[in-house]
Length: 177
Image (cartoon, rainbow, N blue to C red):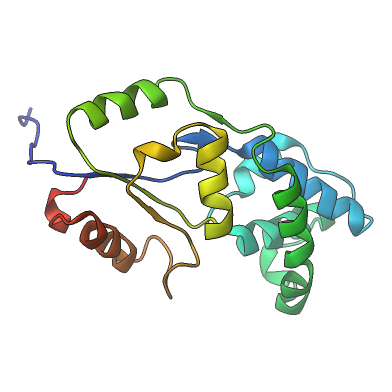
């Protein structure tokens, strides 16, 4: 068995949804409000949890497809663009109502802060939703840098997002976990 790999960590970056915060209830509520607007049946929270990833537009596309029993590729791009503001309005209205930090997150952030590690959040979630989520969960103050999905021309997993966060934290990318 190989010995564990080690490297000097000078900063730590986290994803938001499903890593720091359990946001699925807020996301599911907003999806189901949108589906109701469109005359479609609601989806179970567990189904919506499986649809999350790669940003809000992708979630909306996948939710419309699941509600209609079709492939996500069959959902017209123009429809996604047209209904996205309605989803975002629903999401903004309920933001943080049901979101909680996962167990151990606050204690872990406290420990890293005590070690003097600068922290970042890097997410594909639209920027206007990120800081309010962190504030509702009472963890905003831990993060020196927050990079939302619309802050750069590319999104995760593109390396430019991580490189941007490392620069903003003042560390070499190889020293950011």
